[in-house]
Length: 156
Image (cartoon, rainbow, N blue to C red; front, side, top):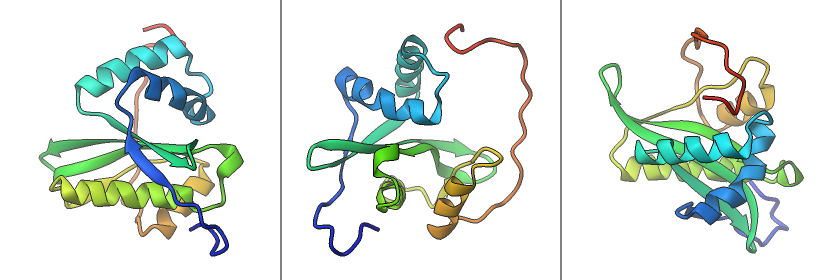
């Protein structure tokens, strides 16, 4: 959480316009540096059409972080929310904004009727794992993937 001396609050709102998504791009690139703007714009367009929602965290009008999430029904868990990413601008890390974004996502998921929230991290993402564990998340398995074809970012 922000220090007790900090009087600023994190204002969180849904990204609804192309301008919002454009503004979030530099922060998203801190997590996905290989993601070019054209690919990002194309993926955002498709993701939004399939239920993805991005929320923007601002302090005094300055963008400090973003969280992306999607709700989904599945056979294993029922109705769940999946946190796609939590990214706090490197200039603002260590002030509790990541925890506030996660708490916002949890509250939003409950409002939407979800009783479970899930996410994954990359191997070696120890700071992210610590943030999630501090927020009450438990590790429940391993994540597997298989690359079906080689494509550099920017070409789909």
